[in-house]
Amino acid sequence: MASMTVNGQALQYRLDPQTPLLWALREASNLTGAKHGCDDGGCGACTVIVDGRAERSCQLPLSALEGASVITIEGLSENRSHPVQQAWLAEQVTQCGFCEPGFIMAIAALLQASPRPSAEQVAALPNRCACGAQLRILRAIARAGKMMAEAAA
Ligand code: FES
Image (tube, rainbow, N blue to C red; front, side):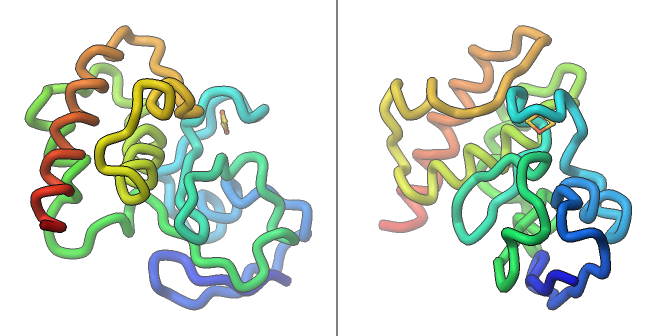
């Protein structure tokens, strides 16, 4: 059993402790925003925010998450779209959309820590897009960072 908070709701998963968080979210909680891509930590499609950090949920066993706070794309923003989601739309980033939730979660965590991230920080994002939307993603990061910095001022 593992107890944690998911999108602000206290949950207990009565699953094998080695179950990856990705599958607990998708199968037990019906939170299917985090995607199953590579299953080896390389694509970032399964990214969620755990205790404020972007994490690849396919690589996190429930046993490592006792007491953790998990945010998925479904819980990223309560009443209106998160600035990263707004920037995503404004820059028309979406192509096939498969990588989208993972990217948005990773960027949201990055911008929360650093609204004007360096090129190295952006390049270090553990997310991949196979459609060729990288330039639009970079523009969305800059736009969202500006929005978040202005909101914090
Ligand atoms: Fe988790 Fe690819 S499915 S990193």
